[in-house]
Length: 424
Image (cartoon, rainbow, N blue to C red; front, side, top):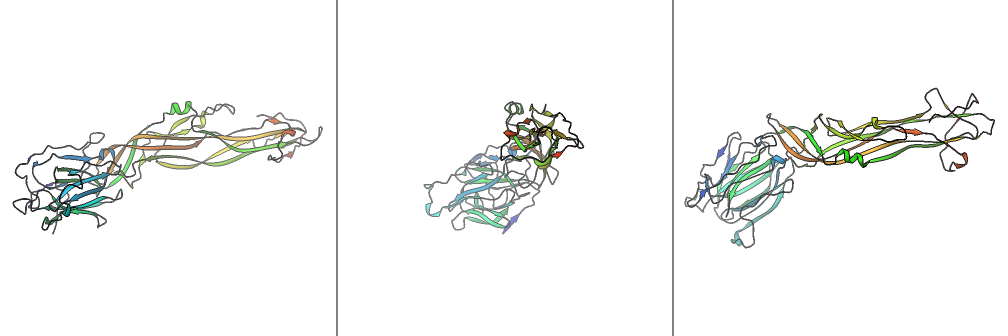
């Protein structure tokens, strides 16, 4: 028989399946869960405590949750004897883990022939998990009373993925409790147990995540230091061409034009390192009040002095790639550059690309379907690729110094033989 309770009510076990404190127990010390970054209460769904009811128990309560850091529980391991589930432990997406509740599994725990051990099992971040629990019996004078867990089973998409149970005949109560699970994302557990698992109270996210926004970001790599080191800057060669006038002295002048426009991709990314967090599967946006470091074109001083710097550029997306044009033009439309007979120039064009990489610490504000908002600290990585203004120059060179393998551009005969001074 399956006992299913409304998920909007907080139920403290008082049914026959969940017993009261036994003789010799003491009042258990309570625990508190962390609040949010701005003092918010945990976004937990209404829950049901299962196992030994009442304030008394063999151990104190432990409140295990890392929700305030965006962490979720995605794994479980445990073991049982013929009497009850003796020990259980939970694993976070971050790799952290809870202590053992009840007793840690050891080969010399006793009851060797009746022990059941179930190794760690995990489920995917963002996958809704269901839990069913049966109380135990047979240790109490009233066999219908419970002082612990007889069986606990985890389900994903309706399929059982992990279970452990008391192996003794008649040790498990027939009535199972379907634990209220809110949005299905397990954020924490309130547990009690010393010699066995006495009580469990699972804390699920109460409503589906609909949006999450990164509202502040502190970069590990200081921009002043980054710029002082000229870090991430690289010269990108766009074009390299020679132009020459092979005519003999007294011959015609020729004209050349060195211009082009190339498209490159400018991009930025602000990634959350916690891919298995509460907001797994939900794309976060970036608050427009801050931005990502990009090269600014205005920082170019002259064609010969590169004063490129990274500055914060505002953005509202966590990832974006856009085309940017790098253009250069030696000779404006309708005008030309003249080369006298026997003269040559070496034209080159380039731009400065800037790559910025840094980890960051930030705050994510998450909104749930029921309107609840809460914030927590997160860590991530910011990166960008950007380009400064392109630069071109055509200094005069000796014709005999032009390499045989060099690219030589086309020239046209000038209408006027008057030499025109080159303006670099």
